[in-house]
Length: 193
Image (cartoon, rainbow, N blue to C red; front, side, top):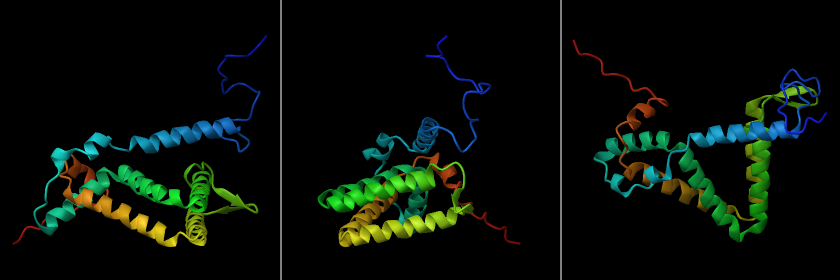
């Protein structure tokens, strides 16, 4: 009797349990897809981001700061995609840097973003902060060794300027102010006696 086309159940004794470290590559890929979909779910619609009717000049520095704070919280995933796209496009004329950039992205995905269990090295668990620090330094050093230092720093600066300009000049919707509270809670004014 063939099992082709059937959905395996957890009561099946054919494979490892779902939480075990010897799960198949297909399990890892499906978990990675689910995590990627969850991360991309935080992305806002591009039409909302590029709405020309929402462009206006803020009133003063306080208004600009509140707008930037609200928009950076609301469009954070979109802004990250924009900065990464600017860096990626700037590396098209530096193929070695582009290959290093893509290899570092793969390392970040597997070692930091898509990991379910703590990373173990020589039988000891490595903390998330240590993995973050090592990957950051390694990525920076490898990209700087490719000879595209000025190009990378310039593209990062251009991406950040684009994001900040949009965050300041995009009039946030009324509902965004509640979302800004996710990142900070303003101190209510104290009554004067």
